[in-house]
Image (cartoon, rainbow, N blue to C red; front, side, top):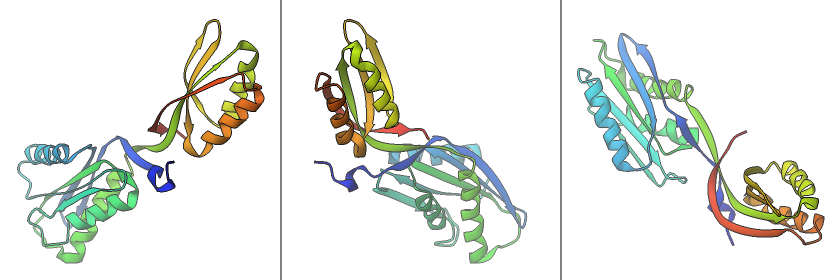
Length: 215
């Protein structure tokens, strides 16, 4: 039995972004990218340091795992708590997982103070996140449905009614449909199909998995 906490929905990045803000002549360039582990996040930070080799700071943060199991942030020379942690808080608040951000700062000659740095670094991340494309990850069941031609219309109606996507369909002597069903609808849909077809449809659970759900 899968408990509810085991399949909470979460967001992932489909496409990263870059945004820039200017505060008192200091440039803050935020680059956001999807990552799947700490090694990828570290390589991303190194890449940004090489790209903007002449910048003074490259502050970073990342959130990995659907329950934010792995998080890290770096102030990279800025006063403690003024950059990395505020950036991380923005990432956590967005609900997006498997994500990393680097904010590169070109110093403009004017000190911003602690509050000004926090606002600038978190603001740059927010600007970049607003440009990202995300996708929702839901937990569901990949289900194979085997039926005869007489019942396929009823099954397709039930699938559409439950907003279930058909991944694959094979029309031969019988009809075979492969679908992904949201976990919360799985039990009731199987019951509906069984009742609608007089228990003639074959239902085979293939696997339970996270999948991308487009609104």
